[in-house]
Image 1 (cartoon, helix red, strand yellow):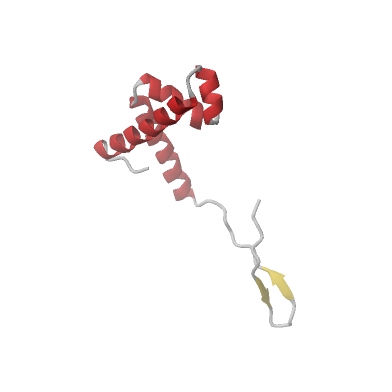
Image 2 (spheres, rainbow, N blue to C red):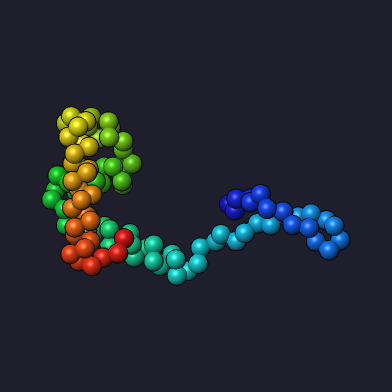
Length: 101
């Protein structure tokens, strides 16, 4: 679906029309996004198991922090801490392996 922009134009005859910008993906963008996802998945696989599990619950299974806490039977504060630390680890791993995300 292409969202409508508020911009309108007038042609030479005075008729108005809505200009819909083309927002379809460029093949190169799709390739870059696919590579970024693959790189991120490789980095996630390098995390220690407890961090890997919580990251996958959050970002693959799309669970919120409370749902993760309930699923893993751990305190909500622990979930927040683990996700924060996992993100920091991913940043470090990305730098070490020269991976752009």
